Length: 93
Image 1 (cartoon, one colour):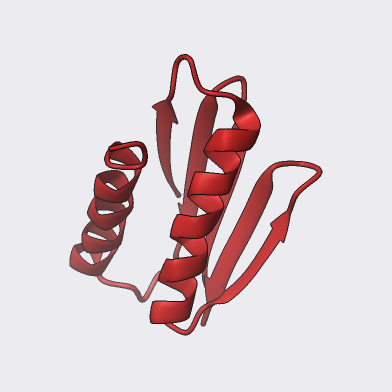
Image 2 (cartoon, rainbow, N blue to C red; image 1 turned 120 degrees about the vertical axis):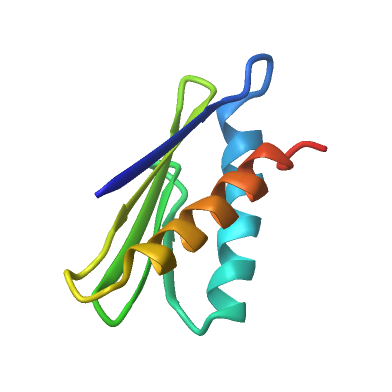
């Protein structure tokens, strides 16, 4: 399991959640992933064919966790994680 965290000091949790939701919704649509969000918990989940990504926003921090089946090559995992990291780094740019 991969874990990616980003802290956004000075930003409110609702503001961070809305931005992450927009990002994940766009990724899910582009890649035909199932996407669900929970406004109350400020969290969400994307999934497809055994790959699962979850995110949660709390205390000005977003935590993304990725779970892959054993058959997914490491290069594909790395590409997905690097893409998420880039998008999080540019979230408020």
